[in-house]
Image (cartoon, rainbow, N blue to C red):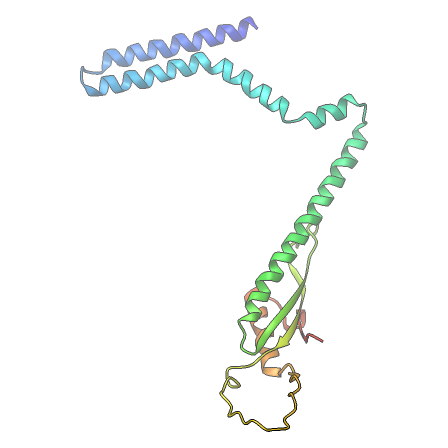
Length: 203
């Protein structure tokens, strides 16, 4: 404790002597007032440095109450390590789910921009977080509901018949050009092979 106080007093004396030296070296002008203010701040910092260290130690001790309670409750090292591994595993699982969900939204927005797609559902299979190639996409499945293409958006002539029955809802098929465009777009944007992308129609 005495050694710490001695070092503290020496640092204050050194800063004061250095400030006095600068005061003697500088001419009487605006720069001298500026230097006096700066050196005053340095002297205050050297005086308050032990107080700041004590506050930091108290803050650090307050941030680890769980570890302190675990040690005080008599848990062994292996039990603490097992608990830490379980927490890390759950964290990795949550990160994996969030990554796949966000990536599915990105791919869905890309697919919806394709002409002839009314709606889409995307399922992403990515490598687990524990692997060396974590985040790498293994497979992407795109379920597409076909829509009206630009060529089909033409105004047709409407005739009214007296005994006309209500027309049945047209069931559209997923055309090969739309499938190829979706596959090519996903493979190019996400650096995948064509065999890793599967496009199906929503049943």
